[in-house]
Length: 90
Image (cartoon, rainbow, N blue to C red; front, side):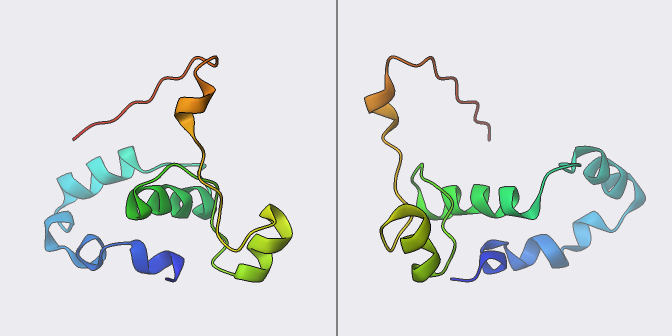
């Protein structure tokens, strides 16, 4: 799957964001200073429903970096000695 295919088409073509008030609110909440890689990684976490390393969408690159074809999944339960805090919202 290509990275940008994970972005829902309706997010890009929605008329709900065309009015000036919604556009201003959206601009105020955009992740300024965030790289595209970070946004794609967040999309991977949501799409694959696991907590793992960045998937490079290329098995050769994943093999070089991780030593396996797919990005490794991080076992957060095995790291109970490290304080963790995860924020989520609806």
